[in-house]
Length: 113
Image (tube, rainbow, N blue to C red):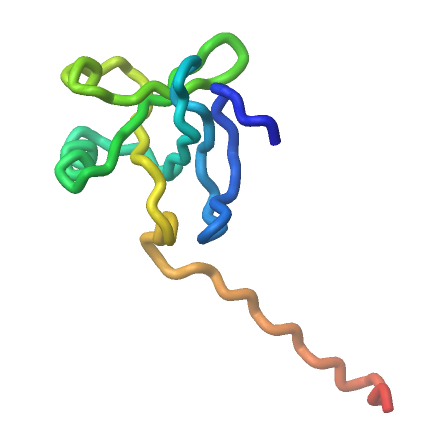
């Protein structure tokens, strides 16, 4: 995949969790991966206090780009969702994951041996 400023879904190469990946600027850009869980104001403050950068995902024409929430941007609500920088092992689900039911064995068939 060619890396551009357009935000795209991409699995993390370390933990294989789905992330939002894009270059964070047009010049001197950094390859950035975001956890796909939007933050509210309190969660963004918590992320900032722990040293995690946060980004806005901004719709531009037919695609999305990301913009870092610096001290100039973090002070106001711009109406775009805010996401934290990705940390492995990725997002841990809030509840248990569904476990598929085992198939019932057919009793009418002969064994394969």
